[in-house]
Image 1 (tube, rainbow, N blue to C red):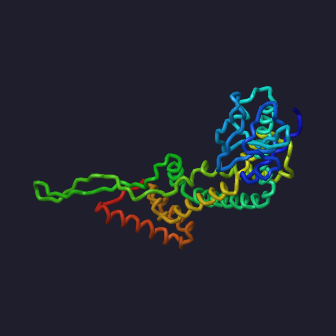
Image 2: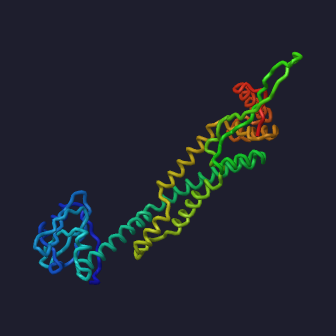
Image 3: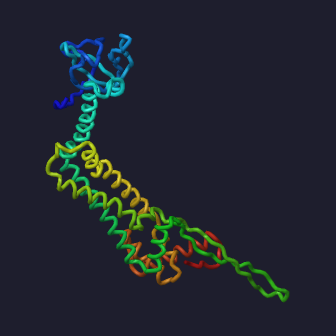
Length: 326
């Protein structure tokens, strides 16, 4: 019962039928069973040939099962359910089928590891490319935050954590009237006005980068140490090893996600974010930083013009007397 298990897959019924001695309706019992010739996993269903106590064949259709050899040199079909559940636990049929299944799953898990090994260099190259891109995006955004006045930097990081990305200001309206003496007076009232929202604000949250960068770097380190396939790995060991390595598709998804967020972030009027600052000097400094990040002219005069533009647009849109920032 300790003979070596060799996993062989049959990819079609025709391939099975070509076996010398194959009999499609040959009954399989504990007494006439000899060994395992392989397994099939097909879209079409094959009928199980387990011989019941009544003398009839099981005939239950299976997509997955075993091709078995019999003592008279012939071959037949045995469904996986019958092989693993309908024979006694101490029978050769059950014991060999169980060992075969264990080895089949182990080999399939090892195949995943082998594919990783053979495609190691291409995978490493892609993971390193994505890691560099994500880290460059991280450095670019941290440079923006570190260049901003602390009041604006705090506001942006708070937005990135809370998810409340609205840029809002207060506007003061004046309602004019004449008093009893005919003198012109006014009453002030304030309301909140939303300029817009900081799109893709999560880019300013360090946690948005921590997990993908850690996963990329861990996979890169494991691949760089992956010098050979350990053919003695168990199914669990092989599956665990493969699951810990990021695939090219996963890396590409990360790249695409960050690229889309960056395009969204850079496609907005970043100078509007300066409206989060109550101090006019900080608003001007923030505009200067954002203009530079967009590769636009960013002199003090340019920044002042942006601050004035935003203020004018708010007043025109709301009809307010003045804007109160922060």
